Each structure stands twice: as C-alpha cells, then as structure tokens.
Image 1: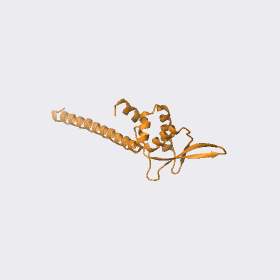
Image 2: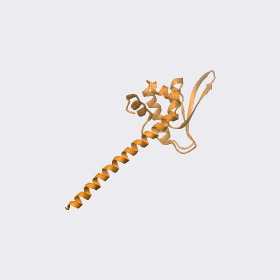
Image 3: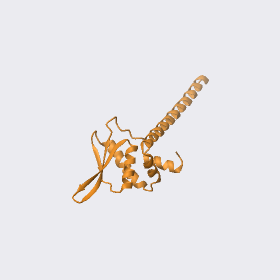
Image 4: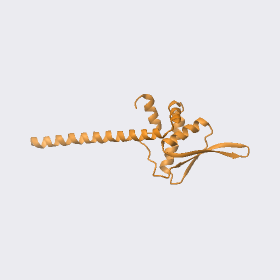
Length: 147
C-alpha cells in the first residue's frame, strides 16, 4: 500500500470519528433543550414541589402512565385518573404540563359522597413529542448536580 493511500484512510477515519462525535453531541444538546423546554412549561410552584418531593415512585408511576397514554392513544382520547390527595394531583398536573398535555380536575358527586377526577388529553395543536430524557431522570440528574 502506498503512503498516500494510508494517509487517505487515516484522514477518512479521523473525519468519521469527528463526525460521529459531533452528531452524538448534537443529539445530547437536542435532548437537553427538549427537556429544559418541557421543564419550563411547568408552573414554578409545581416545579418546586416536584424538586422537593420525596415521592419519586409516585411521580415515576404517573409519568409511566402519561407516557403510555401519549404513545398509545389516538386523537381525542382522554385519560381519566381518580387522584384524591391534593398534593398528588399537583404532581400529576405538573407531569402533564411537562408533557404539554391538558389536565383538568373536577369534583364528581355520587349522592352525598364526592371524589376528584382528573381528565388528561393531548392538545389539539400538533402531536406530543416524548423527550428522550424523562422527568424523573431530569429530576435525579438535577438533584445529583449532573445537570
């Protein structure tokens, strides 16, 4: 093999490595921007509650439910959750804001008893894109100082 050919191969390999590295960095930057945009949709008081919450399993469960709803539901479908605890509803509404969903809680009366019902649906404008970084992952990274 000639020296020119080996040099050509070496330059090609270096360029390929640089290209793949910049694509990966671009993807990471896009993921960071997407999750930060989603985080800024959440009301500031709700952000504080999510940051301080020790109920990470609850937040994780709500988030998994919401992500499944986004992936599997069609236009116009509604997810109904019966969450009675006011703080839990606050967290649920924050997760909905993070994923750019509409969530409304109403009181449902049956005789003398009443309960809260939260209806969640997609916004009419555009489709909901799931960030690659989940809210729980983002909160963990922020808490650990990685973010």
